[in-house]
Amino acid sequence: MQIRHYLQMLRKGWWIIVLTALIALNAAFLTSYFTEPTFLASAKFIVSPNPTIVTEYDVVNSLEALDKRSIVATYGEFLNSRRVYLNAIETLGLDEEMMGDYTVATVVLPEANILELSVMGPNPELAATVANTMGSLTIEYVSSLYRAYDVSVLDVATAPQVPISPQPVRDASLALALGLIAGVSLAILSEQIRIPLDTYRDRLRLDTITGVFKRQYFERLLEGELMQNPDDSLSLGIVELSGLDELIDTLPVNATNWILNQVTGVLKKELRGNDAIAKWNINSFALMLPLTPSVATSRTFERIYESLKQPVELRQYNITVNLDPHIGGAVYSSPMPVADLLEQAENAVQTARQSNEDAVRVWEMKNPFWVDDTTVEA
Image (tube, rainbow, N blue to C red; front, side, top):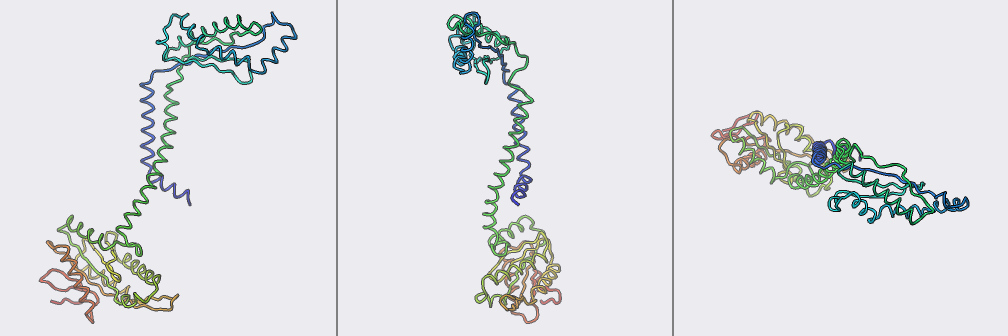
């Protein structure tokens, strides 16, 4: 269930993932294009006992000493020393400031008496030359200081043909992977931020019990509809549950909420997708029917009345509730203020409540008169 929830988040935020991946990919290509290539040249050296100056017994001891790694590590530090580096660039007739873009590193290979000297910089030929020169100077210094051990060249440094950076294909692949990861994270984060905001907005505009609009929001919605479409037909209705009003203080809260949700379900079933429902008062609902003339409004309200007039059984409480619904409607006529339309709907439901015959009343501005699906009263 949790996986499905995250998949829904990713489906909603797919554009964030794609956009982030494209940004990362473009950034990688631009960086590769404008970055100066860097080359790495490496030379390898081996440390071993000097057989010309030690006996067979000393050679064995020397090999045991090499196993302790201290001698190899010492030679590695010597190879990586600043003294050797400065002497090498001086030998090559170079200036230290010119070598500002170059770096030198020495590594003692694990489980071996081998040193690897690496020089990294923008010029592959110069990097290889510096590495070989530093190796030669190290061999000279070591041979004069520690005669029992030899340092000899295993592999000379050669000018590399391919830079270690940038590598457009590698960098683009890495950037794409990181962009996808970042995009997925942003998509999930944005959805988690949006959900509380949507929940907060829903609390402001939706009734917590029935899930329909609150009265204040419904009034703003109605006003906005009339401002956007002042010449279109629109009908407003108020569904009052007189029977519930008499029991609202005696019924358990859960029972009252259940009845209100049942009524909401009936209203949603009878109305269209662009119609709006709101909790009007404690026992009434308001309906907005855009693009609906008086005759269609009367028929819709009549169907709602027929559904709501059926008794509601609360079996868990052994109670049968007669909702005694009354519906009053008003048809918008331009120009007509929202307050007047609401007032006419209120008057219509009051007239329906007081009438012994007609429980559905629809008011329309035609001198004016009442319209329902059975009678027309002047």
